Image 1 (cartoon, helix red, strand yellow):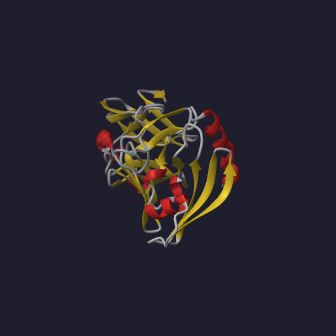
Image 2: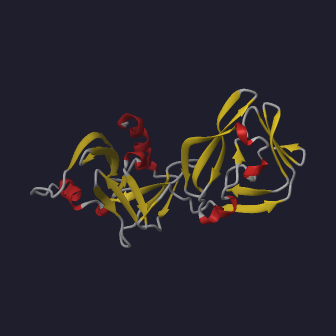
Image 3: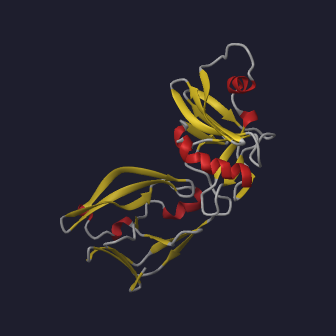
Length: 262
């Protein structure tokens, strides 16, 4: 991993990120049964866009790390009260890539020593057991410049898969999300043959819409895995699409709105 990110880190040290701003949420990170970091009102996280097109990510002030970790960083003597360990993986000019062990778990982070991100730590979110925003488990980082709009529309919508009509309705909710194509969410009863539907075990999470559940469809003897998704319990901003279905608009799928393919 270190070799993959060292070039990115060098660029961040020398030129800084594309954009950054102080985060408004109180963050807590858990690893190996230990809260390894917890930001405060006086030591807030940084919301960082590393590139122009990338998604933002949180950087954590080193002063908010667990006391045992700070003891290791400062070289303080004494036995730590929990099982933590820190080893150097790679040194990059102005930063160090390290491996943090807590209990039976471990993660690789980047700790910035120079440049505009000095004093902050870059974590890999998928290596952390859980992240919490203001005490609540969260699905992902929300971009403060992104928004969701939903509108109920009366339009004739037909969905075809491999040329066969599988759904039809005259009512839908149109969801617009900044930077993404508009999506139509239709009633579940719009599907013409519910016998062709099979519930999937796949679950994905979106910080703007909530946890997505998936359905597979069998058409002309061919199974289309996870072709349809819905939000059983969406976030408040996407509440209008609760229980409604949306189809992936991909090869083999035709979504017609008032006779026009979208």
